[in-house]
Image (cartoon, rainbow, N blue to C red; front, side, top):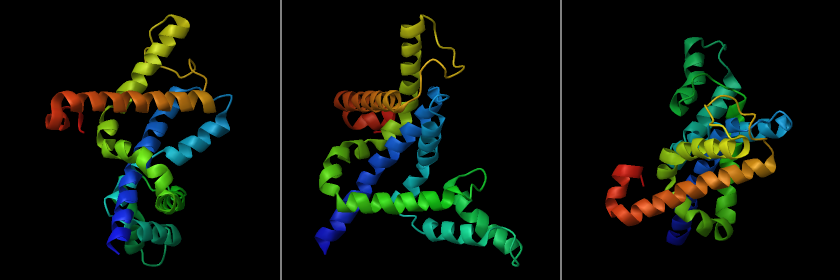
Length: 211
């Protein structure tokens, strides 16, 4: 029983790694031009966007799951009036959404259940590879956006000889290859900086880089 509980806690911990990878994916999507592969871009954005809500489930707020289901089923204009509206908006408030994207609710619930099962079932395959990413996930969250911008600036300068001023995404074509490479570079650079900072500063690295 103790081993089973420990295994469950471990794969929930590894879920942090999945969550931060999806967050990095979501934040990378706008840096690419998806006009020639707009369906792929839309699919990636739909799956990855607002993945920060997964940290609620990891932290133990599993009550949000049934609340999302109740909210989706009831809608906002049922006979109970204000009570229906309150139940409808409660999970949205808890998740930090600015408005109730009701179509995303069953999607996120399904992803949580699927990913939890996959990590539990195949922990031996994925767990060890994601442990360190999970461990430093907050640090990655804290710094990954800087690397998304830095990589964009470097690529634009290398390919066109100009400095990227933050406007437009047409400089880098969005497809499965460029997106995968972009995300991989962002995560690798983030993890490398965190590893180096921890080596240099030890326990004080949390004050600087969040990990």
